Length: 181
Image (tube, rainbow, N blue to C red; front, side):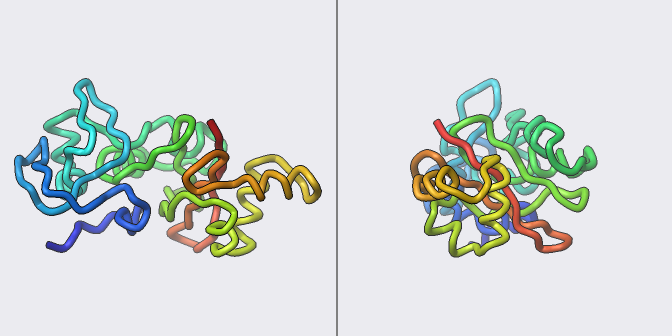
């Protein structure tokens, strides 16, 4: 079965936020072969029991009153470009989120939410290239030198600190932020 397309999270399998599973979805009751593993904000617990199709069509939000990204974190609480309420709703209610150490943020650019590309340690950040490296360095508030070099060496995709990398849908610029436990 082909997964639904998410314009703000283009490959949720690669990011680890959707995995193969025979679990029945708490929303539609079907076992479709994949399940969402990221955060769910709702009155009830829905850990690893919502399928990507119910996220994409909005039924998980409507039926379970679930959201997948804190809407206050879209745009970094005012740090980045403002976006419309429609964009906020699509990211929060119809896009797979991701887990972070602190409250997750969704990078915005060109007055739109960006595409989440994934978590990154030093190796992964290097593979994204100098633009991503500069964005994370700026997010950390560190200039070139020993502090930045030590921070960069400590970045760990599965540990702490971690970088979260995004790509602007309009201009292609890479951006994001970092956090730690």
